Length: 217
Length: 260
Image 1 (cartoon, each protein chain N blue to C red):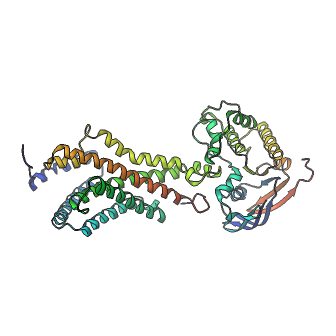
Image 2 (tube, helix red, strand yellow):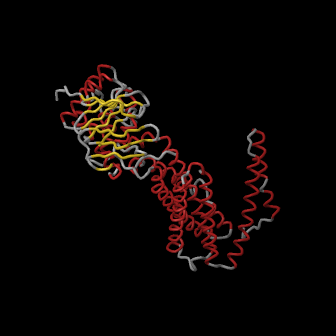
Image 3 (tube, rainbow over the protein chains, first blue to last red):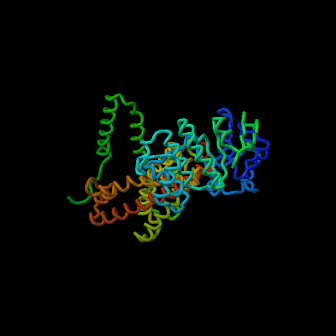
């Protein structure tokens, strides 16, 4: 689905060849500053390679409209910005910005349940903890229903139990809906437990790629 | 009381007592502003004397080229003032946009005001053209300074929100909408406030000047109403052109935020 051909980004990334497969879960692991987030941002076209090219569905990413691409390939940042207002407004803001029809409260409440957020939709966002804000941002992405999910440390601010629940929900959702997921995680255990492919990045280079062939889909 | 009371040079000099008053206040308070107060007072005096002589010449020898030249000088000075104020923060395309917005916004409103509202004949009559151009350009310049400041501040302080909106699939226009609206609102607010207070809290300079010069108050008021509406239009048009074109300079062709 995504193919990196001799991609470089400044001094941070140097990837002669790398691919991310369609309808698979790929995790990127590696130390802080190794370039994982930069790779994710290049997949979302928030950054463009300074050298080389990225192919998406057989088309050079440079030839694809950035806004249209981001609507298909949605990204959850590590520290997602939360907009002023309440929970409902924040969950719907992605759809609003994309000028799409807004769903009713039932759909919104369904997403709230998926991300384990038990608060009234009218609660102002300043009442949320860091972990709740991260789940709110995840819910915002789920409502967009994109083809590809790019998640940057989606469980970084969560406790162990919630992390487990959220990882199960996200990976289950992706598999059930036949979507593609590329996820950055600090946890090797999570990477190996949930991914089809684990890619280890060291100093901007692909250090090791492991396929999890025993996964029961 | 009939006729106009002429002010002699001595009488004008008496008004400098106000400058001495301000100088005394800043000195007593230890505020380091004496130099600027003196320079601005002297500069204002010299500039106005010079303009007085230019206007005398222009009124005596009306000429379309001279009138157009004076208006172009005003535009250039207004653009220079804006650019000078934000020099370090402006990329080249934004500087061009400011010049385009200032010229297009003020000249369009000026043409409408003089040709359709006032129905000036000949169109270049300097006693109308120049002071009205000055008011439209001056107020638009203030509006652009305010709007630009809020655009630059917004794009810096709300960078994370703009970036998040782009990540969520917003166009750069949609991602900057709140910042643009806020900048536009703040830029036209002083004009709206002055309209609210007009005639009640204060009498505007142009109207006061006309009344002092012996024009009937009703005529002066009719001009003041028209010019205030003209100023509102010019400020709004200039600022919205600047914002609608200017926000794009914060993004590259890939719809990514540019690093500045």
